[in-house]
Length: 514
Image (tube, rainbow, N blue to C red; front, top):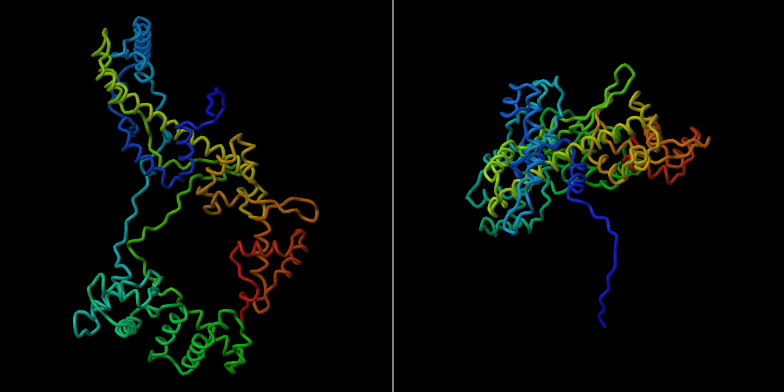
């Protein structure tokens, strides 16, 4: 049975302005200018620039004249609003719209100081013109001898299948299918392998390998064919070739004693062979920079300067241009007011005014969102700087305090999610390098004295201990735990293993060296 009833509910919904602000907070400074350009293209009522024509005209008048005219305009708008009656359904009064947009210049703002110099503008970095890695390989294809055109097509298809690391990770059957569907060439697996062997002799050595083992073998074989190598070099390369070709699994797991026993060589000979292997390049194409790849530059969002022992924080606003309401839209409102003065606006005029109002509203919201973004980011970073003052003053990572998002949220009065948006993908430039903001957040670890220290401090000490260890007998996780406990840190072995993995440090067996 259906029933109708009336109920009240209290719901919290985000306004479009709040959603826009949250999205802007997540944007790093490096791409903020792109977001502003998108808004400038979408909203003609939004404009950028320091000074416009109306500003130049206003400069020629005294401040008293400008203030007097503004007061007269506001009084006139109020009188008109009081005199007008409610418009009929087909008409609308314009005075409600003029009050907010005719003389309101509060939406505009400046992000640069008066002492800003044009020399501080970002300079466009020149893009080097270079041949791509695949173009370099294709030039070497011309040195091969082809009996017919189809062979050249097969070789070119193989080169096109090589990835940016220099490996051929596509299966032979997949290459054969590509030749049939894209080139209308029917080939065999023997033909593909024949031309692949020729391409694997190209420069750089190791190109076209199907796995790491084959890549290293190709580079060793290339060295063995050189005329200038000595007999000792040939002996070392022969042992290196055997290690990679026959005992690759033992080599990757660093079972050095087993390698010595199976190869029947001394420890010194094994060390020479391994040193030779370590000189090889696991990514043959790494020495060739593709011009199609855009270099990644880190643009700091904040700058901290130590001025005679006092830290000074500033926002990097070089990617945020000055924004203001387009004066052309203000002029259109003035023109409509003059046109319909003393009468009711028609429907067409109402639609035009509503369009202008919508664009100006959107522009003011965006400008206000940019302003709030700058203020929120500054307040959050200022709280982080004061919280980690000892670190920013000395640069000693051991002086970092335990800090979580809630600590900064309590100081700034912001929500934890807002602090998270500010800290995400943001960088701060210090005298000790450019740091990722989220790296300053860490949990706490209690010492044996009951004092709480940052886990970043423990990780730094763990890194120092591993760096100073004897690589012939590296410390196990149990030994690392004991060493940290001797330094006063109450830590478990599994915690040491977790921190070691977070630092991308391998286990003791893989850190072993001869």
